[in-house]
Length: 114
Image 1 (cartoon, rainbow, N blue to C red):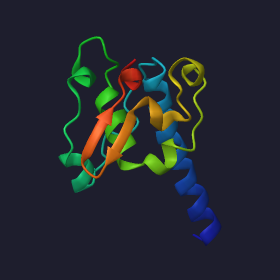
Image 2: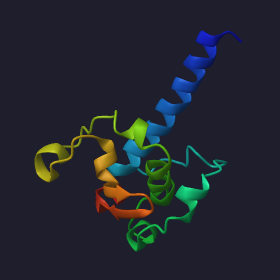
Image 3: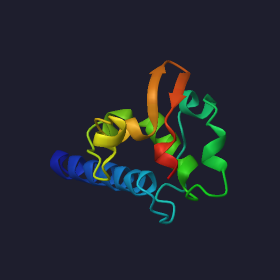
């Protein structure tokens, strides 16, 4: 595979994962797009908030929050289309999941859990 094909494949996979996170954050309840992901030790060590496990949260909420911890670089490039920019001041999709982060100290936003 040449470099361009590898780049396009990686970009496609990243966009698919970001799309899954967007669907969860805006109330979708699609099936898990990342069933076999091995999270980094840093992301796996961060305890997710209880609201991602609430029965009313989308079934993939925990996966989406782990993805936000693992790939903030991707989610920060995905705009929100559900109006949370005006209502909650979110600048991008990452803001739906993480209010702030300093290493393993994370303050989560509950918007991503539906």
